[in-house]
Length: 347
Image (cartoon, rainbow, N blue to C red; front, side):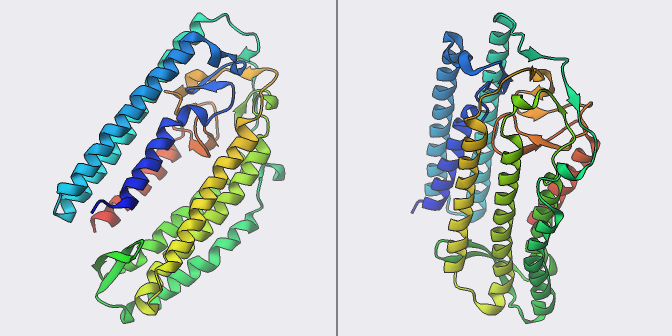
């Protein structure tokens, strides 16, 4: 029987990739900044959009068929897991390449259009101070994350001797469906991910000291950051509660319904992120001088700016924040996170 959860997850992820060009400010099209949103009516821009939609939807449908075939004909769980991971990776890679091609087409179109004086490459301001108003959320909000972390750590450490030899590590719609041999790494794995979530909230809570243009070029930015950080903290709390239940389930026999309830809550918070983006970003119209920094955005996705001291900035396309790839500490942090996740997964 085909896993509806697997197919549903693929469908949602594919839809998010296909809709990427719309997760941006009005005057940003395929990661390329313009003075206004009138470029969307240009015949060349519409042609780029149509081609992107046809190719991205076609790619997703082909990979969906491959996923269904793999689910139907793979009798071994390991083979199925590898096949599914490869298909999801192919979705990520191919859809990203299609978006980058759209970005390249929009850059060409921008060069062909008459230069707009509203776009500027030299009228910028650099904010490098660390005053209290930069903090869109007080540090004390992070204290909300401590109780679940402490409770999870205490249950893991003191309950370890009483746990069974097989520990549930994944919960489906009908309860636990994957187990691992009891070990300290297996038991402490949720604690590790709680630390990662807390660290991300700690870093992104501070408004970046960023190279910016006219503030009206990104209207609603402060309110968007504040609301999004609140949602992220709530999402982190819900996720931490899932990690706590995972550690406690071998001792307390937690009913899987609690996992479903929290999962629905997480989904609702993710939906709230889209609504906040539409309210504070998508509907706002830029005005005044707009910083034209397309050369700092590789493919319209990856931000690389040595003159910007920020670690986190608002995504050019998408919801939330991205990192400044020009900062060495970003590469170090990413390497540590990826290495840790891979080691835990292999173990």
